[in-house]
Image 1 (cartoon, rainbow, N blue to C red):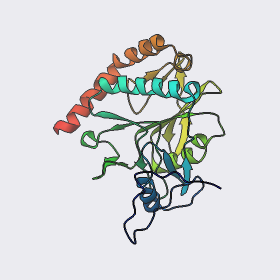
Image 2 (image 1 turned 90 degrees about the vertical axis):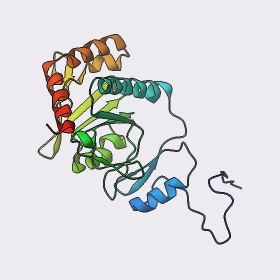
Image 3 (image 1 turned 180 degrees about the horizontal axis):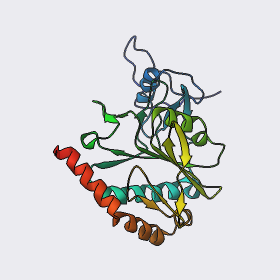
Length: 241
């Protein structure tokens, strides 16, 4: 006999009130129905709609395969944001990408709409449209991050996409060019964002959990003329000058 977890979100039901089904991996749903079911589920559960199919996060994530890499990636983006007005960062926040896709990327960084960003915030607090940058912490090359998600992000105009393949000790950073994701080049073992000038990354140091080297390279990027020009551009957009 199987039992179903009962949560405060589901009980008590008013007379005649419909019990909303929970999301299950593999469900084929519209985005509206996905959100209706997601909003009825317990807090803390992660679900994504990718190409019209529901994917649920595993109940537990490993410290070494996800927790630490995710935290380190968020640190890099947060540090960059602290030096770049008009840029905002999201951690595991849902994105209404299109009618068949509502991912919840591990990391996203956008130019705020007031500063000329391509996405916008809805009245209920979700991001609508493609973030300028998306980052995912992935187990392997065969995961959804390198397949269905990649195609959805590319088609909707995510300008840069980073996938950290933890088990393979590799970081792929793609830039959208002519409708295709192409790897950003490395110069002197550093990857330099083209969308966020000054966002410089030493991928080997990030993979090796060497924060001193990661920060050294990132600070070099933040001290570059390109970053200063980008900050001036963002400020001019919001001021209208």
